[in-house]
Length: 137
Image 1 (cartoon, rainbow, N blue to C red):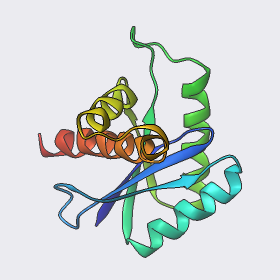
Image 2: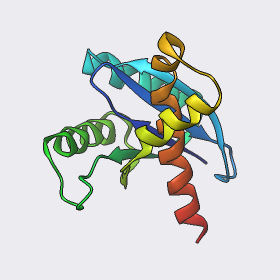
Image 3: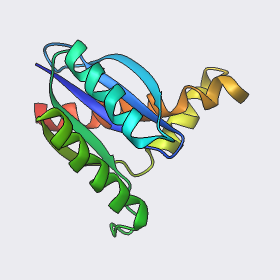
Image 4: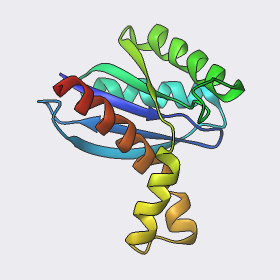
């Protein structure tokens, strides 16, 4: 079984998929998400193609642990994915993943449009890596 990590965004949604052993992130991509129905259809297709057994959606909490409006949007998106895929969908605290993704891309000289098109996939991989590490514990 593979696990899919999702970094849901207004314009782009990052997607990361684990290897079969659920030990590392295997592949990443970004799907456009301005049209939520299309984004869901793209994610459902990717889940089927990659034989995903579970989905993890990043939950953007405030630094004090509270949840704001963005967290509610992510919870709603997770529920839509649950219904569309029939898979278990967990939420995972994603505090600072986008900041970390930008730092990683800066260290590897990704700037401008190149970074804009990659940062969400990197954030999804960080969400998935955190979740996989949690499962190993």
